[in-house]
Length: 78
Length: 151
Image 1 (tube, one colour):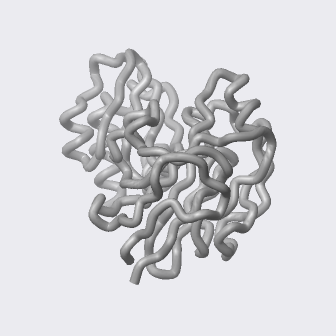
Image 2: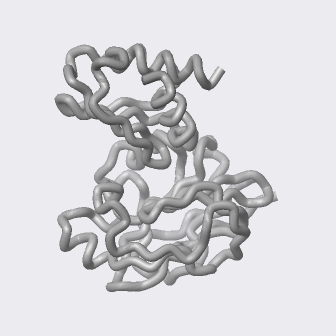
């Protein structure tokens, strides 16, 4: 289940090739992406994100306290 | 049953809506209050008794026996300080008492780096209705009640 969520978030962030860096911070994933236009905000919310904040290539995905676990699962997929 | 959530620091209590970070101001991860620290280097204390569920230099989560998870975030965007100036006194998994020192830090130094030192105190992933008895905005001493949470 958790792996599915990680995969859905990764897809909505534009896939593994679009990720420059991903870092968990308690309640959110702080991501830097190659191409900000590939980020699918609706897709992130469909994957369970409480909120998404994007400024250019920096995307914060608010996922709640499971951010640490999810980040690890996403790293495993990269 | 309800549990009291205390202030982690001395300062001024206020609503989360005044915090300059939508994750907290829009209560994306849960309801709570914010405390703007009043002084220089000092301890942030546990807002509730429980188990240290998550621990970073700039933030921690304590899960109380009744199930409520309380997040204290020391300043906004302070993850970027990478722990500099924060000294931890507990470890993940430790059982702590309310009021026990968790982290020594310096809000003035955080502000000198250009960050807000405001401390959101949030109960994770509960509805706003789970909280009550909110303290009136104004001066608060570490350990004094901010609000209660129904468990």
